[in-house]
Length: 586
Image 1 (cartoon, rainbow, N blue to C red):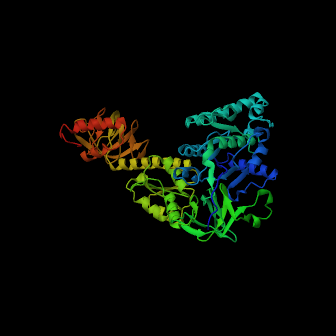
Image 2 (cartoon, helix red, strand yellow):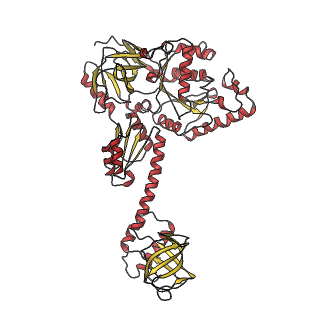
Image 3 (tube, rainbow, N blue to C red):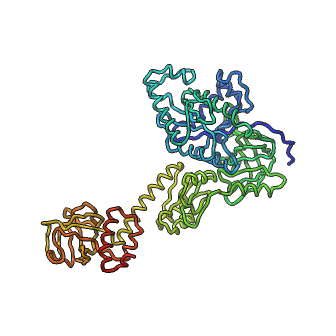
C-alpha cells in the first residue's frame, strides 16, 4: 500500500532487563507493571509479548518530586523482558533490533554472579549503556523501609545495617572495576558517560524504583538523542518469540524498533531456510493490564503500530521463523527487502573445517556465544535444535577435544541423543552461556587427561627407580625386589636397563601393600617382579635403573607435555643411548 508522507518523531527507548537467575528481574518488571495499573494508565503492555510500555506521564507521576518541573521529549520507556535472548544487544553490530539501554539486576547479597557477568560482557562488547539495579536491599539484616532517597534511607538505618549495605555494595563496585568499569551510587556521579550508575532498590517493596526510573529517563533524554529519532517509513523489527495461539495458529511476537506497521501490510521475516514473504492476517496488541478480564480477550486488533512497541502478528507461513529473526514491512521492491533480510541473517562468525559446533535459539545468541568463546575454533554455527547431523559432523573432527556440540537455549532432538551413544561426541546445553563455557572447560580438561593417560599406556614412558637395600624377596624366575620410583613412572611389560645401557629384564607385575597395581609413579615404594633378571648378576641392591625407551617412543615423547622430572629422566636415557647410537631418538 502507499504510505503517508513520512515525518520524524521521537520514539521511546528500548530498555533490556537482564541479570542472574533469581536476582529479581521479573519481580522488578512486575513492580513496574503493577504500579502503572494502580495509576489507571492504559500504557502498560502485559507480559504476553515480553514487553512493558510505560508512558512518560506515568513515570513522572511515579517519580513525584524527583522529576517535578522537568520536561521530556521521549514518550516513555519500552521494557523488554527477554531472559536468554541476546539479540537485543548483539544485533547492534549488524544494525538490527537492539536495546538502547539496559538494566542489569544484581542481588546485593550475592553480588555479580555468572549471568550478571555474562550480560555485562555482551553489553561491553557492543557498547550498550547500562545501569545496575542493586536489588533486595530489604533483605539486609535490620533494614527498615522508609520513603526517601537512598541517602536519607541509609541515614535512618542502624549502624550494623549500614555497614552490611556498604560492604556488599562496594563488593559490586569492585566486581565492576574488575570488568573494566568505574561505578558508584547514582547520586554521587557527575559524569554518567564515564561511570556506571548503581541504584539501590527493592523490587519487592518498591523502594528505589522511582529513582531507577528517574535515572533511566534522564540518561535516555540526555544521551540517546538522535538515535531515538525515527520516521513513519515501513517498519523494521525483531522477532522476540514464535508461538501457537488458539484460533490464530502460529504467531510471532515482534519488537518494532523503527517505522510504522499497518494491518494490511506485507512483511518479510527471517526463516530457518531463508526469508519468508507473507501478508499480515491480524495485527494485535495486548490489552492494557487493568482491562484484562478474560484470557480469550487478551488482545485487541489494531490497524497500525509505531516504533518503539511490542506487537503480535498472525500471518500464514510463519512456522519456519525463529526468535531473533529480522522483520521488515515489504515495500514496492520486495526483492530488495528479501536481500536486506538475507544480509541481516548472515552470521558474522568465522568457521573452519576443524572445530566445535554451536547451536542456539537466535542469531544474536550465536554471536554472544562466539564472543565469549574467544579463541575457540568453530566448525559450524547455526540456529535451531541439535540434530543427528550435528553430532555426526562433530564426530569427524580429527582433534578429540573438538568433538563437542554446544547448545544455547535450544533442544536436543531424540535422534541426536541416539547418535551420541555410538560416538565419542559430547553435547553440552544450557540456558546460561557461562554454564556452557564452564562445562566445556571441565569436559576438555577431563578429556585431555584421559587422552594423555591413553598415550602413556601406548608409549613407553620415562621412569627412574632405585633398588632398595635389604629388599630382595626373590632372587630369580622372576626376581622380586623392592624399589622406590625416583622420577616418572613404571608399568608392567616395560623393560629395564642399567646406567651403562644394558637391558636387565622386563617388569612382570607391580604390587603395593600386596595389591597388584597398573603403574607406580614418583615417590611410591613398590615390589617389582622382573622376568629375565637375577639379583647379584644383572641387578644389585642400591642400583639405579631406568625404563628402557625405544628410539621411536623417544620421538613421540618429544611432542608430549612432560614434567621437568620426566624430561630429566628422558635426557639421562638419551645420553646413555647415544653412546652407542649417535642418532638415537632423532
